[in-house]
Length: 76
Image (cartoon, rainbow, N blue to C red; front, top):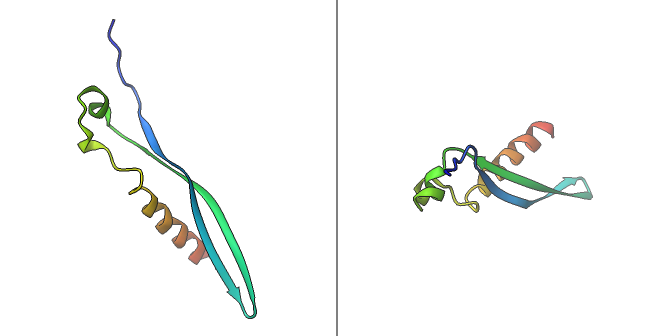
């Protein structure tokens, strides 16, 4: 019996994003928990032990910060 990898998803959960919003003499603290999920053709990492197609999950945190900053700047 053979098996086939049809989909693979991996990532990092509970990325803490913290921001202080200052308004005159008042400061608001905003905190979010974000999940970063990556998916793609990473079958060789399972079948041939070739991790060259895999992005380290810690590296996926930084684009999450960039997206969050862009979203918050467009709201403010």
